[in-house]
Image 1 (tube, rainbow, N blue to C red):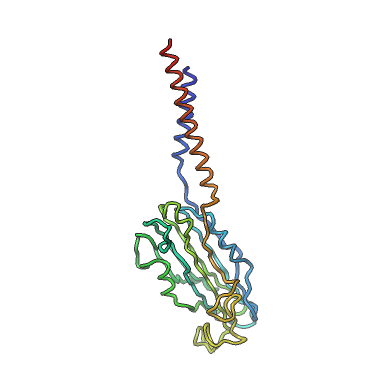
Image 2: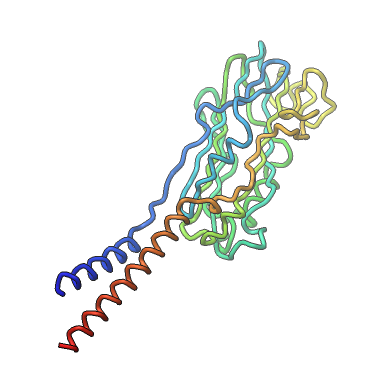
Length: 275
């Protein structure tokens, strides 16, 4: 009888220990080796839009992900690079998301000399936690406008665009998984004039364009995005999540163990009374 009681208490203790194991936040890295290249006549990339979705697929509350995209000029002359950052949807706009979640958003550009420029940064964006960013990711679109100038890259040089998203440890419970903010990042290139930037002698993104003004990836002109636009798609990060599967298994096993322990204790108590 003592052995049986010990076994029951051991099973109960194991269940309680499993339920108390903390979930550790993960810092993910994505985009290693990813690049957008201007060949002199077109813009090409070595990854698909779905690769970015895959990179953010496993995010859980408390996790973060950092994506890096290299911009490479393989033209024989200098080129001016532009970028759009259009927000398609965000957590606070979703009717299915719970109130009170928050996430941090950080976008920067590092030039060929290694000098970093922060394009947009917010400590807490979205939900009830307000900052100077106000309404969250939508504010980034308003600040950066349709196209903004990044840098002039000389022949053979490259720069890096870095995007980091950090989910709050209590972000929307698990409901955010259906509403992860979707960001669309498009790039446009113009063969350089004398002065870097929109006033450098070219037409500039959104202008009349021509053979020397390549459009956004797979688009017809800068300001339009074709099917190859570099997009962070909305993804359901939790639907097929192994975390949910294992949690359900652990819950079921725990309930079974507790029922088994109660049954053994009741049986032993009945046996003791009969004696």
